[in-house]
Image (tube, rainbow, N blue to C red; front, side, top):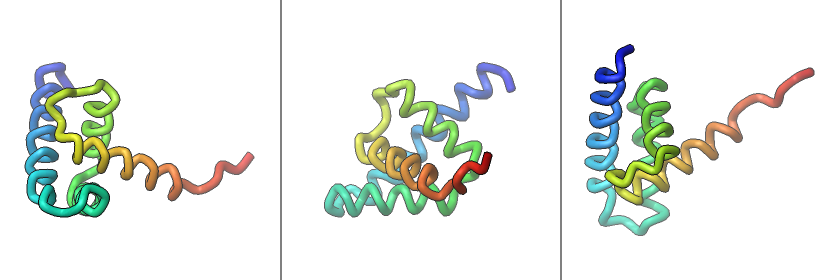
Length: 87
């Protein structure tokens, strides 16, 4: 994938994620973050979730703080649901 394609996907993920966060912004912060995380986990494919993780890790300032919180919850959930490594 070219850098231009990757950049376009990142912008799309940021825009969609911010739109989702705005839809839940009327809820208390923790409830809203959980709702955004659940929506992303349910409807976004793994490539899109990885793109969001990369944006958060890069400190993208265009991301809604609620979206950043949701991405952190997704990462925490993913790490808890991975099977234990077997030697």
